[in-house]
Image (cartoon, rainbow over all chains, first blue to last red; front, side):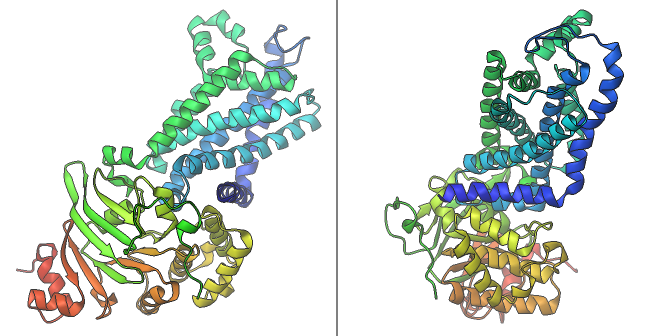
Length: 265
Length: 265
């Protein structure tokens, strides 16, 4: 019961912060909507799509790009959460969390769940707007989409948490944009199918295939059509467990001791 | 007055013996790389006792506090809070601990009440009890009219009082105050110092109060002087001045930490 109260408290705080930061909500929506309504429309004519699973017929580029943009929302949200964790470390509120009488892994997991809850609100708003824009997205798979979004949100949030344990100052966070977010997003199946990439570059297609974000996007894509991709499910599950385990290890005080970092004071 | 909730009431008691000390630090050392920050520190605090940890900047006060609250881990020595080892029984140990950090750790975008409720949820306190304790504590610290205000709108003195209230909400048996009056103007500091001296009586908790300001100390307080990571004196003002052959605590403090004082020669 005490754990549940702590979990709800952490989720509630994250949602309150999200509500108070309205510009964050709009920024999270504007980014994928610009891609959907500007980029996708321009690319529609230039890019031909063949029928690949889970699609059973020809689809427009706007339809293809939707799962990638959902992944993009979760990717940016995961990084935003890690940014807020770096901010919390600088402002000290992370100390309040880490000195609570709960196991550290549980506190960090609760923080992840809170980030996922925020990303679900963003994704729901995005899907609603996309529907209103007459984008043909089947929502029959929502019952599968929801747990998939939780899993992909956990994976991307764990990655962000891991990064936040290594980054000591907000100023260093720009590097995350350049070295993590952009490569992960562009070297994935979010914007183009991998077979299309293979036509121009084999190594790029291989890189896309081993990118965990590709598998997160594919899992979302299949879930939208009430289907699932076993390989993607396994990759995302393993990556979630791996990123989270390393993140918990990184937040371990004895590791910080070994590192001897005065910045952690 | 409500008695502090002992952690043994919350979970099965795993202590090897019933403690007669709220805090027991023995043979504790810590270093940042090759720089020794704490050198074989031994310290015992009885329930309800007020102990001032006096030391110049860089003496190791914040490092000691970070070790006590589990933010750092040491390879040598042991720390027990109410009989619970901080390293191996951290959940039980932290249940008994309240902390006011040197830097402010409130979420400025949330209201005072939201900050306090968030903390209560981390401690596993139910909403009704939390509301009751917040009201009672806010009245005691003259904060009841500011509960709905955002922390951003509070001055430094009010923010400090909110943090003190927060540290006592879970009725800990040990309170750590890390230079709680830093950055406050003289009248606010004087008022806060008076309130802090009343805390052990009001909360029944032992108090470990780190400061470098001698004028915050009452003659009856037990004072431990920390210098270059070592405890160099332990006793009340009279005992320490007798030990050092000085006229007052200010002189005794200067004599014991002389290499830290600026040279005007």
